[in-house]
Length: 348
Image (cartoon, rainbow, N blue to C red; front, side):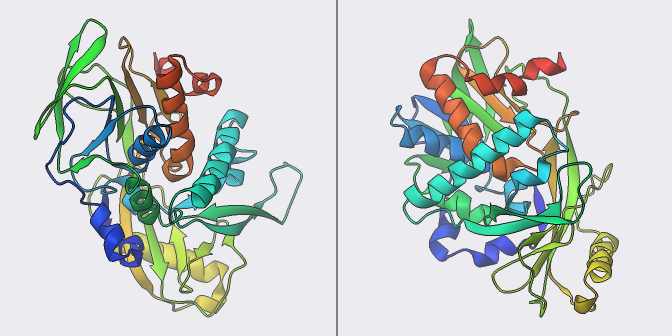
């Protein structure tokens, strides 16, 4: 969930905004080959990947509007190299693979996904290094990317909340929704947090971590790219800053003192922008597992149900590779090798 005025909405075209509310309250396919529950970036990317693979019919349902959760409040930065040296190598490798898939989508999806390549300038990954290392990375407006992907999915129903599931043997046979029952061949729960539905046993340790972001007025200072941990410059010259970790704060609103602290830090690092005001300020809640890494797995005990959750601060980056992994898993009836690192069994 995102609260406050995120900059991304004002950058959308009318057609892109309309995509976020597609098929309100309507479920056109009662028996899809794959049902995707959740209309954030992971869910939409999964539905799009399944359709583009020509693997069968797909229906995506979302309780609200597309991107109304953490996706709409994300920074949209695609920076796998920011994790080199601090996160496990399989995680860094997954991020690098996903960035390449984002670039592929930009080239192959009609209209692209709005990918903007940029230099990331951060600390050297080797312990003895110092200074900055420009590395070619990228960013997206997360809602534009989601809308462009959604346009490639034939069947989407927003305003359609899943309420319960019926399991027979080791299979989900029915997903009940506010708009009627759906009988899928397979189901993917891409709900950010682990799904909480009657009849579904997917009990995983998870919580939400709040974070604040802002975008300033257009800045007279031009940054070379995304400068960690300072800011990233947007098209109009505004500086995107923040991404705080507000541990223990579950209040829904933007806290002015946190915004002030982000601005104070920005002024300290870039004295030339002192006095620049926040044109946009917002907060969002990121889904988090205790080790900080996602779950991409089949639901325990079920043969035809998968889940992806807990992507924390890398949900936008990891969306295409997550979608590809799940699509490969369903079509091949066996997990791809890289999935072993993100199994839910690590919390057993």
